[in-house]
Image (cartoon, rainbow, N blue to C red; front, side, top):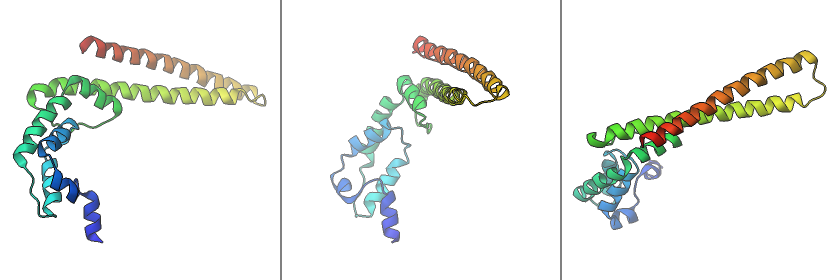
Length: 170
């Protein structure tokens, strides 16, 4: 049972270890933003089958893959998707990647807030459609609705500002 649990966490199965193109595997790991510790995980997975990793080929591929991953455009996309960043970029590209990543995350957060406001507006409008509401409840809902409209307007302007910042900088 323990062996089954461990194999579920393995990065590679026996067939993959036997046929691995270590350069391509490293390039994919780098392009996906994995840390260099990923090689150790592959090495452990393959050692269970008596197979060795080609560290040099993996590292060369990994470095090349990081060149794809560590761009400002990708940093923005990773941040906007809500992905995490494991501080894997080389010093010469990290600053641009992180700045774009932060801008992407901020954009995502504003988009999520705006969606929540839209949902609240929809819920209040639905409640206001109920003709059986008392006047005081209707007044409170309209006041809340007005506040959410203001919030939504502010968030839309913030989103436009962030997207404009992205276009201006990159």
